[in-house]
Length: 139
Image 1 (cartoon, rainbow, N blue to C red):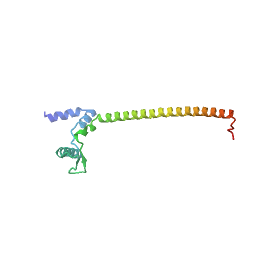
Image 2: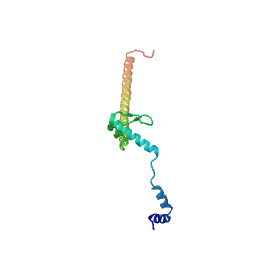
Image 3: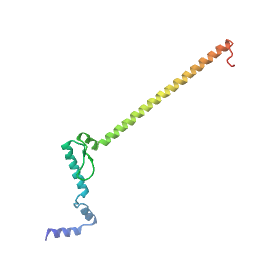
Image 4: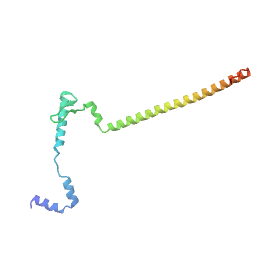
């Protein structure tokens, strides 16, 4: 018996799940657009290595920017976490600054109210002394 015949016999024993799994695992060629993209990426990388320039115009398509090596860390998976941590720190520091401004505002308001009370008492004493001296302030 031929090995192809054995395979065909075994395929008949497959259930629907096995048939779907076999279909899902069959080799599929990459789409042409993906192949073109990868070729362009390789071209851009080689161009950047040769010339050191960030911008590259491929044979087909528009202008492409190639990230230099020192900046590639921004493309790594943990770069998003780093950005999030910086934003959280910024929010915290901004919140702390707003709180400090609020505390100073409350202190200034209290000092103003206290100064107003002291001034009112001093004016009342001055009026009282002037009344005792015979000066009429109601005119």
